[in-house]
Length: 168
Image (cartoon, rainbow, N blue to C red; front, side, top):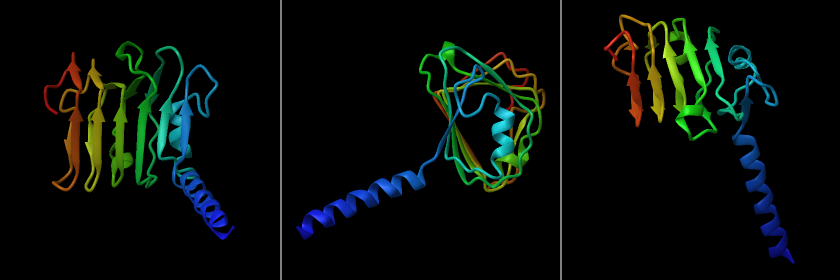
């Protein structure tokens, strides 16, 4: 009998630990998600600290990133549920995003990114992009700029097309 209680306790502990350590919010411009607007989600980061932002929906939506946030969020993943690049959500970044990425660890997966102003990667920041498309960016100086040598940017299986700047 005591071994049954022991295994139930261990199972409950695993379930409790999993629900505490992982949090996800959903985003869909058409509704049916926790958020319909990327800027509203970013404004809430100072009070709510998800580890995953999942773009959902059955069509391609565009989101403009204009919200500055100085929240220290630790590690966060922005990713699309889509695997078809023709349906990846489009994120247009049209402001200096330095404050958001310093000193956080931010991962982007399965997204289209259009950069109007360069993304400045702060010290101690870690950015990674996988299966992303960087297209039609109008930033002319740089797409990404490192502040010092302590941060890092990695690109895995990404495509760059039609950008005004050739400097990464």
